[in-house]
Image (cartoon, rainbow, N blue to C red):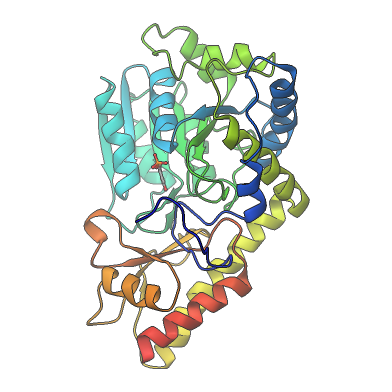
Length: 369
Ligand SMILES: *Cc1c(COP(=O)(O)O)cnc(C)c1O
């Protein structure tokens, strides 16, 4: 396989739940020549990015931008903001990863697990926090392995009521696709990655820490170097970063943020909700034709950005992926232990309902041929 794809397909064929399809204008932005990272041009670029990305995150706090994938920002939240014992809400592969990272950073952690494919409730969290032994909670907003959306606003209310407990939110496949109100919901640490609903290439992770979490970081000597929030905070005052930023990706981010501001954050959320509704309706339409598919997540707890779907009898995740590929479309197998049992559509990023319609048409052919 050559490193360069000579004849790229037109936009609208690549429906993985990460990395997602990137628009040509965003890719082209990365062809700009390098600039140094302690020069006025870079400070201008950061100065352009910050107010816009804060609007996207619905925060007045600075948004840290790490040269890392999303997992880095998960670890960052734990290293800076968790002190002793963590409660990890686990309902799929990514929320389980958050739990494992907590253990791997030397913290004590307990998993509050519900069946994969289900959401957590405020009551469950409330019950667990009543034990009074936790100082941090990890949760996945949009569980990309199952397509389940957790009620972050309600979980945040319960966490805040429990006192000095920090809520660390993985919104990697939520942010920029599903509503997130960082400040209004009081999310102590909320993180995402570039390659999901933000529709950028992989390689950047983003996060916002509230003041209270920063105070924890100040008192934590073993918070590490690479993701030290205090260093990010200090450098952001000068529109700089502690280390060399991923310059090309920053060019792409600036262009993509302009496009997102032009669309409007709420309209972006609405477009994602419309794509999700279309996907669910399509499953119902196929049922009327006698083809039985099933959305894994229950109604009321479905992510607007990704659907994990059980295919009809006789199909597996990999078989669906191969059949879609023959028709020129990329979808994903199930994730981890759900690989065979499900396939996944990433209806997120810069896709449209019309573009999705073309994919669903091809999948209808696949299942009715
Ligand atoms: C993609 C994803 C991640 C992070 O994955 P990286 O490969 O490290 O970017 C974390 N959580 C969720 C929910 C994800 O979808």
